Image 1 (cartoon, rainbow, N blue to C red):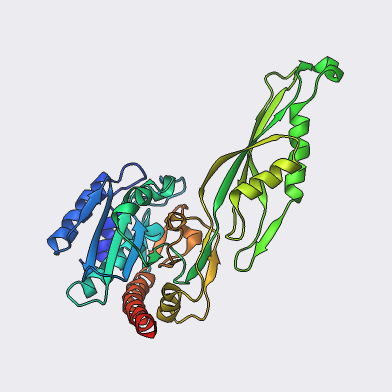
Image 2: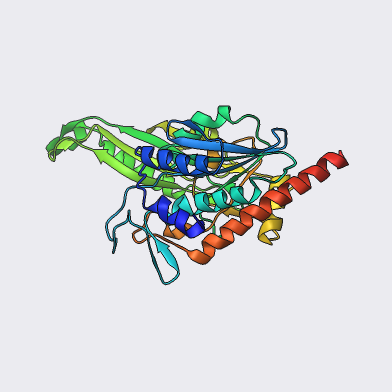
Amino acid sequence: MNAVQLLEFLVSTPSVSGNEGKIAINLSGILSAEGFKIQREGNSIWFTLGNGVRPHLLLLSHLDTVPPCAGWNSDPFKAHIEDGKLIGLGANDAKGSVAAMILAAREIQHTDAEGSITFAFVADEECGGEGIRTIKTKLGDIDGAVVGEPTGMQVCTAQRGLLILRCTAHGKASHAAHAHLGENAIHKAARDISRLAAMEFEAHEELGATRAEVTQITGGLARNQVPDRCEFFVDLRTTPNLDHTTVADEIGATLESEVAIHSHRYEPVATNASEVVVRAALDAAGASAGIGSVTTSDWAFLKRIPAVKVGPGDTNRSHRPNEYLLLSELKEGVGFYGRFIHTYFRMAAREVVHV
């Protein structure tokens, strides 16, 4: 299979999160037949090339997709090519990155590398990151990583995290006709929501400021009763300069409502521009500086590993109907990953000599 045929196969193999078994089995079979020594845990697969010594580089992307939404003009699970686009669910996010990484692996499969390279294609990225969290300890020590996501081949050196708070306003119930005997929890929540709308946290150099967004609210038991409870959820897309616990504590000290952390596993991450993985990625991309990414990814679970996020496609096409990847973008991705691998090991070798 060439790059386009491989992407067609990947897109035409349904792999909505939680149902990646078929794609894991079929892709493992294809890669094993080509001589790659596949390892598998659940529906995540990986293989390692090189001489088994460090530096150890990780190229990571995911096999799963979100479910198809409304609005598709064709079968989302049947890839087809039209006007230079390969259209189908997951083509952009992130099976294009998977296909491009595999083509790059083929190019170096029988060459000598000054280190080791693991290619990992995981499940469950779209619904919590269980795939990478499960296999991470099995991959050994990693010195640098590239996360394949649709970034327009721009090198992302920082990524927002996700902090979700559950806020509960407590009141006192009464008959609505005798409201003076009660305390309206919805009114209390409304005051807090106004406070949240006015809050802004310290800005990050690449990602800007973090603000709170109320995304769900429930309260009240009857139309003729003053509510004694109102619950609302707050979504914060955090930046690497912010600590989740500190942010939650600051909000808790500001609101009348009770504030609890609902989810904080997606930590914000950033990699210093001096790291080899950043310099090699920028060199391979022909760029002078990295950018920030507002979307989360499995990079959140590689904290303390120098990493970047870069891949073919456009993040604005993800999770939308008629998702596609330009064939020219796929070709560009294959070229980038190949250049990056060679550049990374060349730069890493210079670092060792310098030391």
